[in-house]
Length: 276
Image 1 (cartoon, helix red, strand yellow):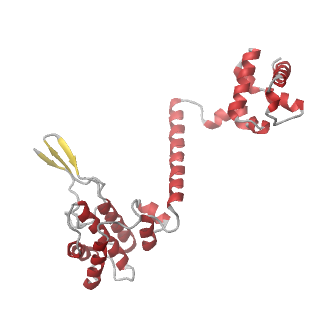
Image 2 (cartoon, rainbow, N blue to C red):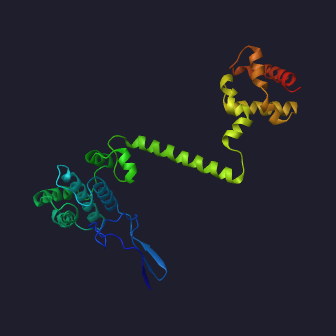
């Protein structure tokens, strides 16, 4: 038994109904005897769909006769050259032109045939290699805002480089993770971040910065003080013990003051002054 799920576009970029379809990477699934098979990912097809998305957004379903029409056709020719190489078909000017001619009949009917042949020869000379994403983004003048709105993946932007885009993507992911974690804490009835900081003075004031030590060192010394005095650890963290001892000694921010006898004197002063 064979079950056909939503059919994929053919390699010429037209869907079975004659319209443009923004399908997923794996666009066709067949089930033979309970085994599901996927078509492999094609970088050439993916970039072709991205270029068609840009054309639809800027010009509509047909590419008008403009000065930059040859740029779009050049990118499509490179995509078909890549598709032929992926299918282990010899990449020639005629094979690229055959597919490019059918694509132009659908998307750019006013594009001259002589320029189409020249573009096909240029794409065939690349032997199935795609141009870099950043270079294509500069050719198409694709801005970062337009790229984000259209969800373009295989083409870069001319105004924001790759490194900056990765940093922005990391920032957006961190924000999504924080919002998701806050929503999860709220559903579980746990404290929010603001409530936690309001209840923990040390986390809010960050006294380790004033002392010139690391956060881990600060809490390690607080724990040692708790083990020495036997006081409740939450109470120890709620009063300025170590920082008062350091400031009274007259050497704030010194890391050597907690060594040897200085450490013992600081702990004694803290125990007498803060845990009574």
